[in-house]
Length: 104
Image (tube, rainbow, N blue to C red):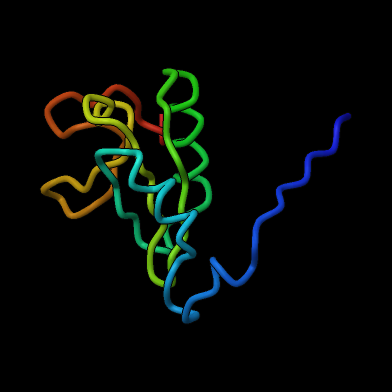
């Protein structure tokens, strides 16, 4: 197994604790859409959603903030990602086109 190290100047990326470093913000801005999940979403649902996205070759970035988990992605991939439906519950896919139900 190959070990990789990432080096960067610490002073450039230091911010207040409630802010993300500049390099992380730049990475997040590369995507043009985001799904904001509550931080207390079940690990089973999150795992199923991420595996479904990987299986469908969705390019995404996963980010964590204090009160939410963010899946950044490119527009058009919404069908393969979680969304909150009219029943106020989280499902994978759009309400009118559900491709996968992790409870099946």
